[in-house]
Length: 160
Image (tube, rainbow, N blue to C red; front, side, top):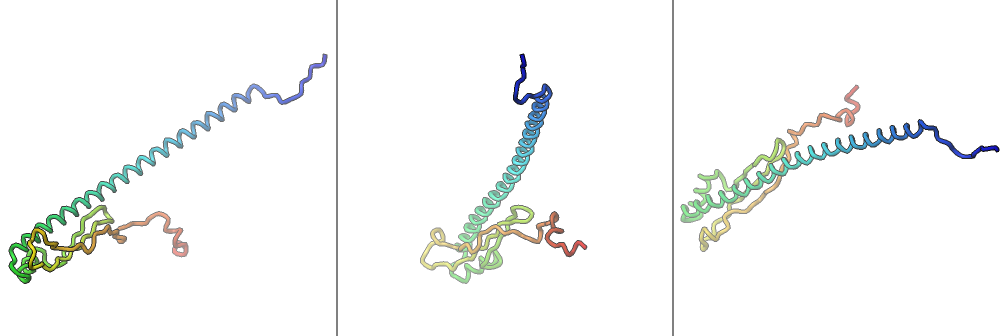
């Protein structure tokens, strides 16, 4: 009898090679997952620190607004008329425009500008609006930002 079979035969070593390749692929995938997870963890920690410093600055800004309101109420109680009120404000703050920079990070700060309003003659200091907020924003100081990597790509003519 002629026993010839037609078809594709795999050698015994082929399965071993396939298992080695599969093991290498799974190992590479797991290493990439670990590296990605570490990078995500580091990025989330940095973001958490930035958020904490931002909210700390916002809380400090709110405390500054509350203290300024309290101090202006005292100035209002000291001053009987408009001129004496603004003299008390001048002594306490230096001018009618009150500014404050609250640091958030090395390159950012919360910038607050308040304008002292004219006192209303018929109202009490407790109900009166004593200042208006002109500016309340986060400012980035670009002079402290360092760009070290990739500058040669932006200015190729200077690298010669």
